[in-house]
Image 1: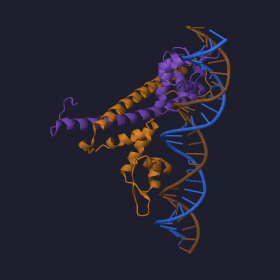
Image 2 (image 1 turned 180 degrees about the horizontal axis):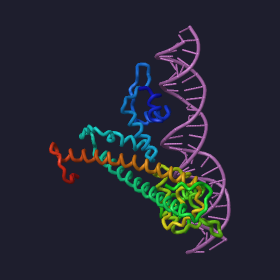
Image 3 (image 1 turned 180 degrees about the vertical axis):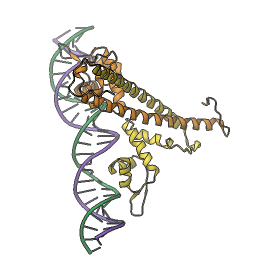
Image 4 (image 1 turned 120 degrees about the vertical axis):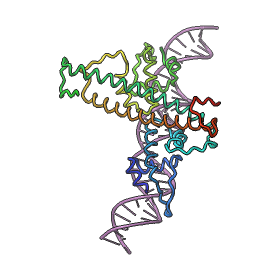
Length: 134
Length: 134
DNA sequence: CTCAACCCTCACACCGATGTGAAGGTCAAT
DNA sequence: ATTGACCTTCACATCGGTGTGAGGGTTGAG
């Protein structure tokens, strides 16, 4: 599949797909005419990249994580250096921190919303628009 | 407490603390000499801000979330517009997405590490019990 | 053959988060 | 009164992720 299709299927701009490649995150093969040729799995990979970027990880880190994120795993253990293991463990911890922070805040928002909506439908507060509380 | 102490206690640069203020995230009072005066709760708030920024949220969003993140909640319900509720709900959903993505990836890393470590010290006989191999 | 719709590379531009430093005010200790 | 460690504002710089467009090649349909 060419870049346009992948862009459309992943909701990414062509520009970004080329940027990801420049950053070493994806390496599509090239057709005889120089066009990038993407394979089906790239769709998932790109979504993965987008998600991680959105969650604040820099491309440098994502590049290190990607090799261990495709599930039907073929691990060439000898290739996995102790430094790599170290990096992964650190990154895992950082991910956990992020998750904890986000979860804490999401729950706080949930509490807040619950309180607000409860009080609002309790009726002692006049409000201009229809109180949709379901 | 002055900016220097807050910076030290939160592991933030003074520059950033001023930036957060400029973005409307914190509003310290001012001493007679013009110095910023922070209160104890600001320590927590700044940590909150840092965590959310690190998790990829822009200051614009954080500004909207902060008012509902301090736990002993005093909600002035009349001030909570329906648009605000809407925003919060959307943001809550986005947080959940992020959490899901991060969790998925963290778990994938965990799986990977487990496999690598198991193979590395178990040889051909993969072991299920806690693999302490260092 | 021509035209539209793709693709390529390259480069400049923006925005948000952050660093750095200049020019100057305040305060506490010597 | 001077010095050093704070603080102030202002402004320019950097870096990563993105947008946009110029200038040009490929392909497929009419």
